[in-house]
Structures are given as structure tokens and as C-alpha cells.
Length: 212
Image 1 (cartoon, rainbow, N blue to C red):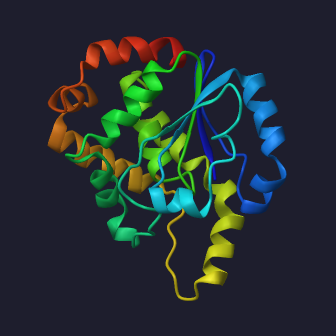
Image 2: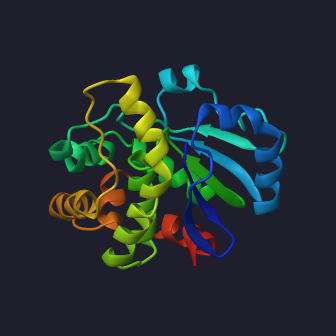
């Protein structure tokens, strides 16, 4: 899977672990790497079923607080014209997204958050974090598509295992459409959080030292 990391003084989307075999060989290495980056919290955005199939290798790592914050999606692959709407499903009405953002904001040090592929659930959380930090839409889109090259091998393997499947590598149009739909429905991420009963000002204040 790919990883979104809020670390030190900047947010960055880091593509590292891209296969089950890599994950199995590197649990110790991942633990050492997380310690070097100052990561003390892992936020897993996958469903219970996904976790049962492929447990997070850091979940039992000493010194790591592991949090399960499932977002809508369950690892399903939407058709290209469904991608922005699938992103809205992650945000709409359940409070799951607010829970994930709160978990990241309240973590004492650096945070690693991830889903399965790293482009959809992780990408949407990353986009909202960047929006809350005042990052421009241009830079949010650039951050979203940067994971594309790292996904090529995994997506190719998925297509080989599922003949006829349609996969959707990151495209700026997907995220741009999602941000437009989100703005039409909620206005801003601050208003969105307030609608879910979250103090957006306090959350943004907690996020700021992690992002800026």
C-alpha cells in the first residue's frame, strides 16, 4: 500500500510499500523506518475485511499507536466516471472522515495514514488536510497525481488477476471534480467539519504544527 505521512514540518505523500511481498519482508525495516521519521501513530483507512486479509505490519509494532478509521470504499474499483462521486461517498454524512482527520490532528507526533492502493481514500484525506492547511488547488492536484507512477506495477498486476477489470490511475480531473462537488455541498472543509460536530478551529490548530 502507499502511505500518507504527516511528518516534521511538512506534509508529504510517500510511496513506499506497494506489494504484499514487500510488506512481508520489511516489517522490521518498516518499524525502524517509522522510528527514524518520528512516527508514533498509524491511521488505517481500510475496511475490517481488508485488514483481515492483509493486516497492517505496524499494528503490533512497539511504540506505535494503531487506529482503525474505515472510510467508504472498501477497496472497490469504481468506473472512471464514478471516481469523484466515490470520493464524495467517503466524505458524506457518516463522520468517518471527521474521525480520521481528528485522529491525525490529535496524534502526539508524526502520523502515517494509508488505505490499500493509496490513491483514493488516502488521496482524499490528504487533499482535505492540505486544503485545511491553506494549500492551493493546483498543489493539491499535483500531490494527488504524484503517486501515479508508483502504482503502475500494482495496477498492472491487478488487471492480470482480474481480466476485463477497469482501473483508474490518479488523474487531476478526478480530484478537481471531487473538490468542486465538495465545495458545492459543504462550502469549505471548515464548514464541513462544523456540520459534523467537530470544532474546526481547534482541529486546524492541532494540525498546523504537523503540516507547516
